[in-house]
Image 1 (tube, rainbow, N blue to C red):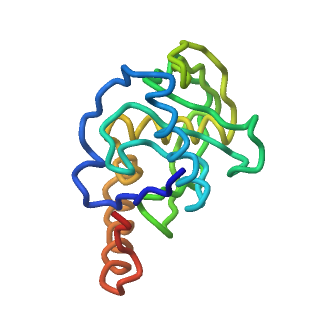
Image 2: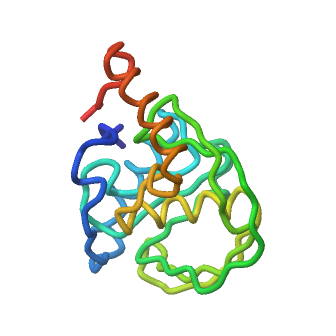
Image 3: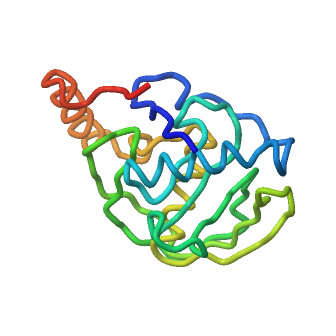
Length: 174
C-alpha cells in the first residue's frame, strides 16, 4: 500500500468531472487500499479518488480510521437515492487541511453503490456516516466544501485559506 499525495483547493482536478469506474476486482484493489491507507495517515474519515488526482468515481469511508476492518465502505459509482432530515454540522476536508466550517447535510441517506468487485448494493446511512458519504459523493461530482457556503461565509472561509497559504502552513502534498 502507498500513501498518495492529497491535492489541496486550487488544483483544478478537484472540480473536474470524474469518470465511472468500469474495471473491478484485482484491477481496482490497489487503488482502494491506497485510498484507505492515505485517508488513515492524513487522518480522515473518507477520501475520494479525485483528491489524489485520479479521475474516477470512487471513494472510501472508514469512520474507525483503520481500527475496524468491518467499518470500511467502498463507494464506486455511488448514487444518493433519497435523503431525510437536515442538520448543520462542523465539517473538514483533507483538501482544505486544518480548516473546518459548518455545513448543512442530510441526517439520513439511502445510497446505491458498487463495491470493490462491482456488485451493486444499497444501504442506509445515518448521522456521521451520512455526512461523510455526502461529502465524498460531492468530491466525485466536483463539488467542494466551499461550494456549500453562502457568499459572506465563503469570503471569510477563503480569507482563512489565503492567510494559511501566505504563512506557508497550507501546501499541497501533490
